[in-house]
Amino acid sequence: MWWQSLAEKVPNGHSLLSVLPDPLETISKLPDVTVPLLVMHGEQDNIVPVAQGLRCYEGVSSMDKRFKRFPRANHNNLYRSQPHEFTKELEHFMDLVFKPVAPGDVQVRVFVMSVSI
Image (cartoon, rainbow, N blue to C red):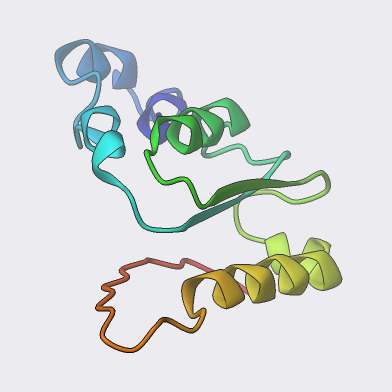
């Protein structure tokens, strides 16, 4: 996970990971995610490797999910690297999340978005 790449930058980081290989227990929580999911990942990310983002994406139970790679982006510049593609993906996701529902249907949708532009 992301803390593995961070451990390479912290003195004695790898010894900390031997004690806490998954400190946030992310992997065990993924199957519980059933809401629509959009993962957008920069291929030049030096904080969270693409393989880790893909592993999280694959572990989520949601049937409405998409993994979008941005070849020229790092961890913090997805929008700046490809604004048109970023906007298109986000609009598509919002259309999915906020699609009209039949009267009487109750839907609860929770999502977290982290964007640095």
